[in-house]
Length: 136
Image (cartoon, rainbow, N blue to C red; front, top):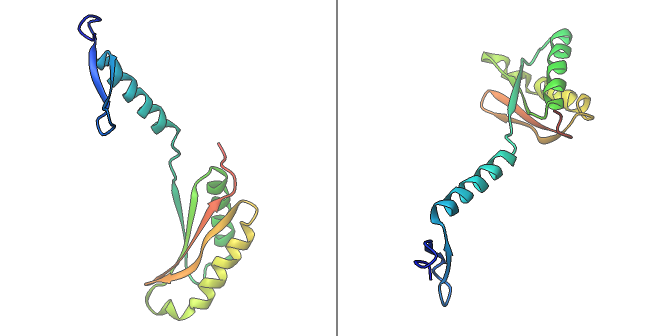
């Protein structure tokens, strides 16, 4: 039947009993499949992660400046990775770093929700904030 129609006999599911075959143009079938995969890939959202770095004794002005950037990142739909970096002996100010990150989380509450609370990893205390609604 496939030769009469000058098309290809393509096995769709070989594990079925009996195996399922279709009479189609194989090149066109491959093209359609690629097109479908490309459309799915285009619909998938890419998550970008933006980082903001603080010190344990970050000044109020610097904090406000970085907070504005954090708000902008969250409004654009990017995840935010805020971290406090402890240099040398400043690791003794762990509480200050945690207070700073929790304050940031509280002030960014209307723009995003906390995915991971502040957690100390080596010399960094890291917190993740995800945007509430995707912007542009």
